[in-house]
Image 1: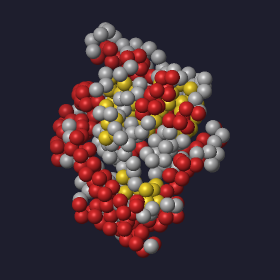
Image 2: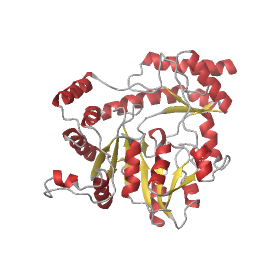
Image 3: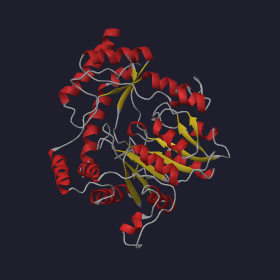
Image 4: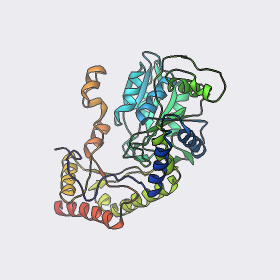
Length: 389
């Protein structure tokens, strides 16, 4: 059984939702109000909070980050045959969004220290059909954003951010998700701010915002109608429903108000791991995450890279036997059956991506991870490598 796929209840899980009593109180009030439809009062308050926190001009709540990415590609817009460069080491939603909009995914290599899109490799894959570059901020860490932005500008492309991991992170003191033409955030049940499912599309590009506003409201100008700008709304273009329920927006808004505290708690636990594993890194047993200069992470994930896939799997099993959940992460998209059929990819195309995917193991990280539980994780990792010495 692969790491992270076992149906075991762990004493120390990989994730734990950061809910507090205040969240339950606000959700209870929302239920009693009966006003639960999409794009309601809570959604508008959340969007306004996002604009203030992130410094963007427009924020649209969505049912998921997947929907936010789809809205991003539709609002760009992509034309049939347009190419979008994205890392192979990422979640499938970004690639799906490109293809659903009629574009073609062009995979690129990741940089080995941060596991984010490698600007040099991305540059080598630009063609006359390239419409956009999209980077993820893996684990909430940013890399190469200035280079990618310059690269996109030089070739007349859009620079986009899949910021699913990145809420609360910054680069050169600018919020992640707002450095490019548009960004997409996630409120999935594993993220730093949680609504079970949920997302947000943000942009400061007025044309993208205008298109997104229509597309997300079933292709109508209903948003203008609700602002009393027109006396009735009509079908303007092909669209869909990309609205978040107000119940979920209420839950996100409650946590958004303590985003700084959530990020600080995650940072403290991230830094505890970094310090604790320094001897193992010095001995070459593991590689720790790298945080580049200018980056203030969102501290979404803490991981180690083992020396080999075998060592990674053995470590995961060792931790699991001690009630500690640890998990691998993405299977590189270029290795997927669909990509090999549709995009003619093959093993060996992206050796850095394949290597880090084989060796990566995520460790428990959440705001309520107690000092004793985190020490148990650290002790177990050291016990594993002590046994192998």
